[in-house]
Length: 116
Image 1 (cartoon, rainbow, N blue to C red):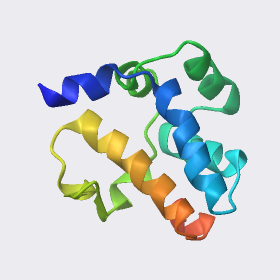
Image 2: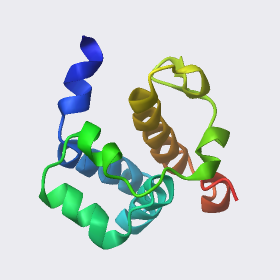
Image 3: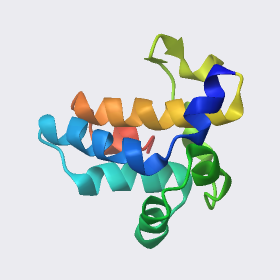
């Protein structure tokens, strides 16, 4: 299964790419962390623990305190797929995170990104 490889990938190996993408567009690690914490319910300490433990995406989302109730409001295309139409729950969560970081890099305001 193609998705299995992504699920087993350490979140910590992708996290620096999220930061780099944001910083190239004038945004900060703090903003990236705020987005990830908003989506997953982690606090800064919990997020850092997942990074330090090199948790897979599967573990990262399985141990997430609570997916934000407004996550279902995340819509649009990422990697050629409409995030709201992805049927596999774990892949949808991963793509939600990708989409939010993409919105940050494109200059969308934090209130809009966090669906407030």
